[in-house]
Image (tube, rainbow, N blue to C red; front, side, top):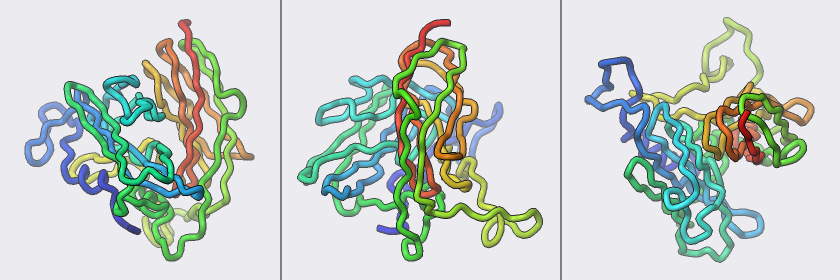
Length: 299
């Protein structure tokens, strides 16, 4: 299974429609660009086996909009079957393809059962069917290759423990609209993989001895992936994301390198409501999450 693309990377890369372009522009083949108004497709990435014999089914999604970030609350339009319908999935969806976003643990005796994530948006319903078939097994190398991380060789890769992360304080906070709120997490890692050594300017380009490839949008004829959680090239880093919540918010900064075991940011909300902030600790290969729930009142 090493070195393969997940279903999402292989199939979606070949079938995605256009990016938002300037007025009157279209992509090759006459594809129509959509910045908003399109649906969100759930994606089953594969499964991992846990030391206790249970399994993690790993999911991501494809938001077919290039700009709009839909909010699809838990319920008939965003649910898992069999129940419980709420398996910790997001309700806030960033643009385009976001891989390996969350895991659902199933017991060791899950067998031939299926776990189905259903999303309905813009009048269209799509399903991701999770199953434990052998060909769906994934590894750290598979994950890293799909997200352009640092661990791409199963032969020479050192054993890598995933990072740990937890809220630095209460996991339930309150805030007011328009007033910045400080957030912090504790995070640690085993130091694997080692981040690339800085290269002086003029000593080489991307590749051997040169600067790492840019971590922006992965492009073919149009943007396919707009990775929110970009693999770190600076050691352990934390990316702050909106996991659930009714309105827009902003992080300053949205990504921070861990120093002395901590990472922090500030978040500002534009609308009242209940929000879940998910912070991901990323070591350059894999990433692990922790959640902070924030109740936001009017200004």
